[in-house]
Image 1 (cartoon, rainbow, N blue to C red):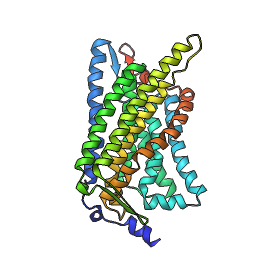
Image 2 (image 1 turned 30 degrees about the horizontal axis):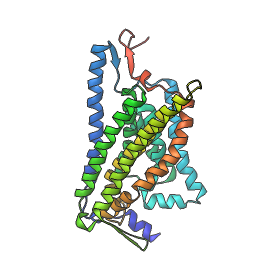
Image 3 (image 1 turned 90 degrees about the horizontal axis):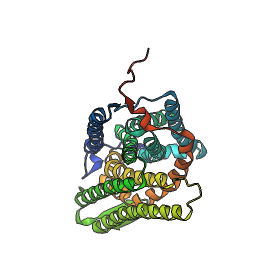
Image 4 (image 1 turned 60 degrees about the vertical axis):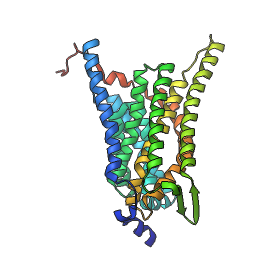
Length: 342
């Protein structure tokens, strides 16, 4: 219990060499600003070109609200269930390392962002984190709240890419590949110039383990995985077209447009939130330094993407037909429809 107390009451001085939490929050704000600018441009375009209203905040229907509440409740229920089944062991872990709680919350928050778009994704992330903290007596930290919101925001941005491509396979593969390349390059540059890493590379000293990985090797592994993910998307697209060509007369479900967005969402959220943002928040609430947390999250990047894919894809494949939520219907409206209905 003494160790946990010391972890929870560690000060910012334990962060060591690294970026500050406010700098991590700027990453979230950067994505938010990109979304707002893109939406304003699209709003003007739809108004002039199609004579339609384009809403930044979706006009959610009663059905949409109930679906959002369902996603939030399931996310919180998973955290509570783990706490109960583990005889409060999970609760102790969540208090000692709150980042583990946020990582678990993020699984369904990503799904919420993919289903409901950026704004509602942010709302789902915020409510999930606040309710999880309240109902498990967890440790609240503004950084983890922002991280949970970032999961929903980035998931929602992938939904925008899907909407922009009009749910067509080839355009989505192109747009998502461009986004993946941009984020991959940004991650590589960040890891190369990361404070405290230098020529020493990534070093993890935890629970008696002393793992050292050269900086160039770690960057190579992560960049290679980004490249592999792009190849998987295009290879999946090729398989889909071959199967469709072979089975012309049979009913075909578009599994690609479910699998590819899930893969890209997981890849980008794990990279941006877990690798870029979370280490600075982790360092503020633990005795480990920033460089330790950055090393841990960089090493776990590939396994976490694979694990998330194995969990999220089956869930998303089941949930999408059940919810049948059309994001476009809540953000696009003809101008002749009155804004206020008596």
